[in-house]
Image (cartoon, rainbow, N blue to C red; front, side, top):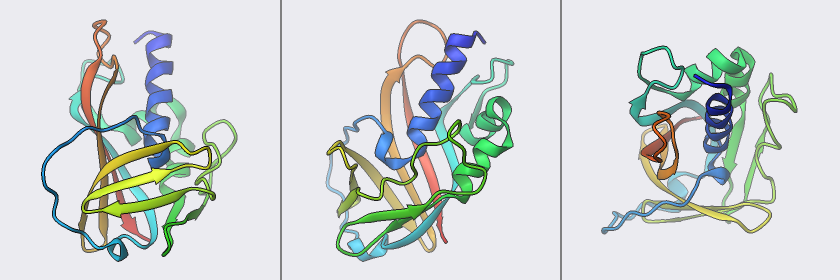
Amino acid sequence: MNATRLNRLLTWALIVAMPFWFGSCNKGGNDPVMPASSIEGTWAITGMKIDPAFDLPGNGTKTNDLLAVLVAYGGPDVATCFTTSKITFQSGGKLSGVTGSKCTAANSTELPDTNGTWKLDGTKLTLTDSSGSSEVYDTERSGNSLKLSQTSSDTDLDGDGKNDTVKLIIEMTRA
């Protein structure tokens, strides 16, 4: 895997890690109503996946586990930074949170954007950062688990010169 592709991949993985940073998502259909109170509270990232799987490490083995790729190329502190960070969806639509242990200027940004807001409409979660940039995610909640997903086609992950369509999934549990 060449350095440019690896840098693009790691940058992309970091960007998709936090809900404020995904690209736009297009999905139609009628979604069941999920009350906003169902996601209110504090959540921790437990997994980051990509579907379909790609040979992200460039070793001939396809993977869909972005945290494993982050560990392989950024070290365990990068994954620990994400998995120990907490995001709180406050009532009234405000976001807050705490940056996790092992987060440094080299492997994170200000997590989360404490001036951000959220709105849940059915199963569509809109997150708006302090600069006013909004992103929409599909949500799926079961018990103490929450999945945020978004489909993107703006990155060439397999190095064939064409952008790949992938579904990015952030798995979270109530903290």
